Length: 294
Image: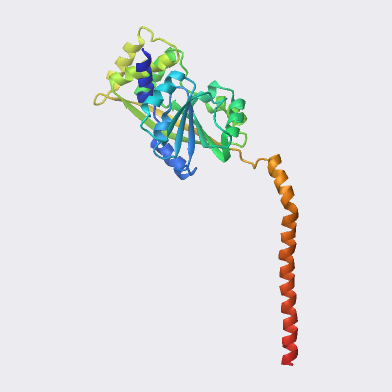
C-alpha cells in the first residue's frame, strides 16, 4: 500500500467518535468556542473532525511527519486548524496556553509521567485532559465478532481491559479521573471494509495471511444488508483535571506584592479610620439632637 493510499484510508476510514461524545464535552465539561484544543494522536486525528467546528482552534499533534503534512494539506481550508509534528512528551508550545488536550491510543506508546509533566506545563489552570479509546463491542454471531477473530489471528489485541490500564491512569491523572462509555457503529461496504482491514495491518507493519481476505469476504457476504455491514464499538472516555491547584507565585510577582504591602496596609488603615470617624460623628450628632429635644 503506497503512502498516499495509506493516509487517505486513515483519514477517511478510521473509526469515528460518536456525536454523543461532543454533546457530553459541551454540556458537562463546558467545551466551547473560546477553547484551544490539542488532538494528540499517531494515525487517527478523529477528534479534529469532531471538534473543529465547535472550538476556537484545534492543534493536531502527530509523531508521523508524513501524516502531519497530509493533514496540513487536507485541512488547509480550515482556518482554525494547526498541524504539529511532535510527540506528547515534548510539545513546542508555550506555557499556560492550551485549554484541553485529547489523546487516543497513542497514550500507551509514551511515558505517562513525562506526558503528564509536559501537559501540566502547557495547560491552563483547571484544564481537562481526555483519553479516548475505541474498543470493538461484539454480540455473538455478529459481523463484529468475526472481524475481531480475524484480527486476533494476526496477533492484534482488540481490547484493553480497565484493570490493565488502571495503574497507568492513576499514575497519569494525579488529581483523579472519571469515565464515560458511548456505544456506536460504523458502516462499511466491501471495498471500504477491505481497505479498512488492510490499513489496520499496515499501521502495525503486518501483512494479511493467505486466508484472511477470503474469510473477511465470506463473513461480509453472510452479514451484509443492502451491501453494507456494521462494525460495533464503544468509545471509552477517561477524563480528569490538570493544574488543579493554584501554582506558586513567581519571584517577580512575590517581590511586586511585597512592595505593595505597605500601601495596602495604609489603604486598609485609611478605610477603617474613615468608618470610625463617621461612626463617632453620628454618635455626637445623636447626643446633640437628644439634648435639644429634652
